Length: 328
Ligand code: NAI
Image (cartoon, rainbow, N blue to C red; front, side, top):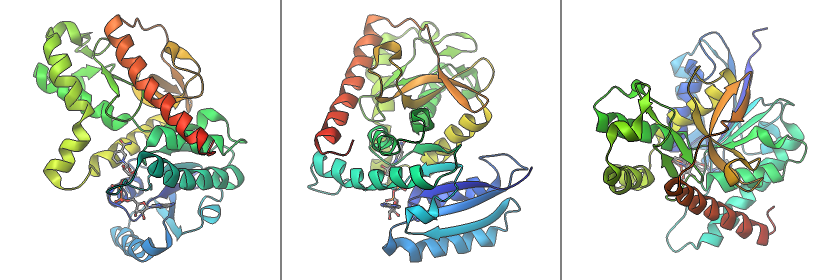
């Protein structure tokens, strides 16, 4: 049937969504024949601004956009949704401690996890973009006991895409020649973009580039600190590229990854590669028939092992912090 897919998006009046909603409604998420129904969640003071965004969606006359509903009550907005993109989060303000940030976001993702648990469609897939994305996803997942854990992902696709372009530019090849990129761990400055399995035109990227100093002193910090560099240059955090990555992750999760390649997705660990079970950590993943699997059997050398362990240790610390706050 060609019934509309119900897509919930939170933080809908924010800057990422000012790009994201138009991409979804134009067909970039589910293809050129699948109608979508948008369910947009905001906090009460942002509903007026959101009405303006809806006016602009109306003014695009998107043929695939069957309806738009907005609201500030997650239990209503999430009713029957098939896909949920959790973008809205509480940003860190000046003087805010890390524990304050975790607590503020904990309140949001606890409530949204419960609302998804009780009201979303049985096949719901949940992707968390709002930061701290991995730990927010962990909180939502833990508060949704009736939804299988593997339906909760967090976004590291932006980091993945950033890394692809850095490699393509270094090697002087079109970005489409770069495949098998992996981001390991947390969507934070500790993330580990792994070049040792990446390929350039089918050849090992680390061997083609053959410049370990570039990898350690240029590539890794450029990808890890790209978010800060965008803020420095633009005076605002990355939004269009974050929206693009959110669309690509969810699209690939629904429609599958390209044959012979993989992508980076932060998913609940099953213990693969020594990542403690349950942490939502980024892995190389493939998707078939709407289900992802973590790519198995990659060799991890000592350099990569140290980097993966460091980012996973940070995820475990975040988990312990939200556990001690009683959020999970
Ligand atoms: P923004 O501040 O422009 O928009 C966030 C929106 O969320 C605001 O309109 C706010 O009212 C709304 N919001 C807050 N609490 C909410 C709640 N309980 N329910 C529904 N909506 C709520 O922020 P922007 O630039 O759109 O970024 C959104 C999030 O995405 C931030 O946490 C940001 O750090 C994160 N981000 C993640 C990236 C990733 O790669 N994972 C990349 C870039 C940003």
